[in-house]
Image (cartoon, rainbow, N blue to C red; front, side):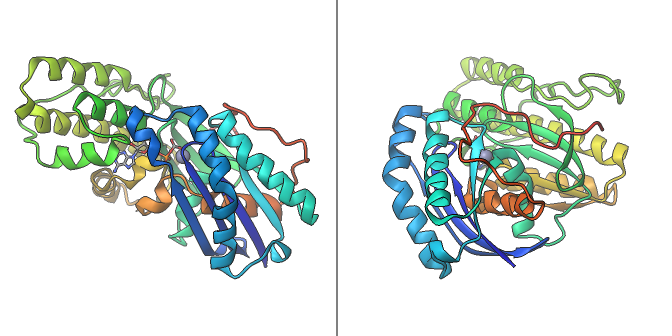
Length: 345
Ligand code: KG4
Ligand code: ZN
């Protein structure tokens, strides 16, 4: 059995977690997430402020995660830390802290790709959310459709060409005068809207697309955002729920249909959702309904595990630790980095 301390500071959550286990038998012993509230005033994350708040929070957050798990720095086998992608200044706080622990205690440090963390996160809550599966990763910074034949081998089928799904939710929230982060607010407002009032085109989704077409799996959400902007300008505030509803239906149908294409083409029986937008119950419900027709089971994380957390980083770190991976102590942070383990579809 291996015990991993995970650390995540890529954006506006300072998080630490302890997990232990072997292979896919993993137990989460503790998870502490401290969300930085201050960014709400600015309507988005201010990188410099995020870094400073991580510096203030990292020691107490890691200490609390260790205490809650009953572990100490002497009883962990490795430290896993998000080193990319994300805000470099924010990432560096976690990376520097993890390397200091690793050096001080003589344990290995493992740099983890944030999106690979999201791929593993759902398995913390659902023991069958393991490969082979089709994954839809929808976060504030990324939108990826990935075929996963086994852990560590990822065929990137599609990605967004402009805004990420979560980013689209956040921008639409702003247009509708809702607080940041906007996803949950848009979801709630949409539920009160009348779906027959307004309809937006499904972005980059057409029946005549064929596998092999560049846009068969790719996403694009900036046009949808503009459609919302135009609708807001043309409408009265009373219409906001209907606009939210129309936006919500367009984005959900697009995500669901592109995932269905991947499931069909690759013959997968499992769909794993990850990233903050996977906490959207309407999306999960629509995905379940659609996948039932294809005979595939859908695994979705709770809102806590869908959004950024260190347990998913520890879980991905455990996989790499067991494969013998070790990061050197000059491990660096990167704003962008391709997913590791990319293979052809
Ligand atoms: O994965 P995450 O915590 O951070 C990134 O890696 O970016 O995702 C955050 C994103 C935000 O854009 C937020 O608005 C969105 O996830 N989000 C949601 C919901 N909850 C969070 N979007 C739609 N519906 C939700 N219920
Ligand atoms: Zn994330």
